[in-house]
Length: 76
Image (cartoon, rainbow, N blue to C red; front, side, top):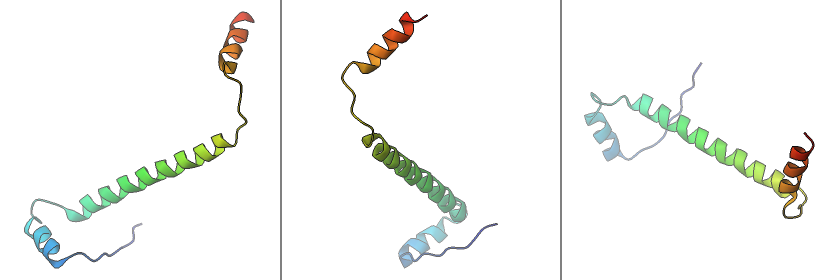
């Protein structure tokens, strides 16, 4: 199911779009553009939320990860 949205654009732009109508499916082009923008902003939102979560983690001493890797390797 789809919905209709409308926007206002300058008259000159519409005239130029109309002159290219035989080459370009504007509905499809705009739909693809919006889909890509939604994906882009969704990724940015998720990354921002992850940064907030990570900032809430406690700090660990430098070398902690290496220490845990060494311990794991030595335990086998």
